[in-house]
Image (cartoon, rainbow, N blue to C red; front, top):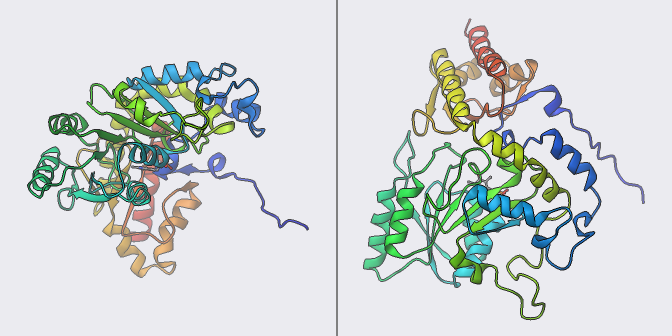
Length: 379
Ligand SMILES: *Cc1c(COP(=O)(O)O)cnc(C)c1O
């Protein structure tokens, strides 16, 4: 048979400034692009494998995992296929079907799916109202007490460190203290934080951390990170009875080849950029101020923002769209003309964006472009 033309070329990142928060932290540095080429062949990390991916010495997966554990301050760490697979593995290893788990109201859909696939009963901790949508630690205590009165004890607590809707950073240490007090393990979902900002699992008092290589760790992926405290290794890293060298929850081995090679190659870069997190937050806050200065544009979620993902309500652009011949598409099209992408086509009521990793000059250009578009259409 003859295959169709899939046209596998992409100039998006070379030719445009991409504001999609999902993609800002997954951009590969040069070292990772080289590793991607070197390890592009299937099973390429298995040349010197003696049966355990995490123990491979060439390339030094073992050394990399040691460094990663130190970076996150966890006792053990494994790579998985993504943050979702990390959550799934923990739930599968330590919960029983029918168990109740507690999750924050801003949890990612993959948390819900991981729980559903494990046949767990989800109880949500509600966030505060519009416009902050803040997940507050005391709400965890309230829901735990309510459950206790009904005779239900959750077997796991999940907290989204930074959620993907509002970019709200939660007080994980406070939730960690509550979890410790109630004797329930806590999993911190760091898909939007690990690789962008510092994570110290011990300081945050969490039992498990999961991260996403392709979202926030400059890896091509799909790859995730699962870190844990020593006391959980026996359950989560339990060996197979039929193949005693293999870890059961990992199905032997997880993400291998190019996804792993790029994650490894990017670690020094990621360690360095995490050290500059404060500058990223400052840059974002300045951008938010510039956007709000245009008028009738408001950043929602916690203010001032503590993360690069920001959500704006933009009645200004919505009003323009109502009268514009291109209707809701005008914003996307005007931005595209200025080589700015990443805001959904047709969306003008609100949008999410991020200027993570851009130079101040680039952020200036982006803010000015929005200003220009508003002014031009307003006339
Ligand atoms: C993106 C995201 C995920 C999914 O990450 P994967 O690595 O693709 O599984 C999970 N949780 C949150 C909060 C996210 O933002």
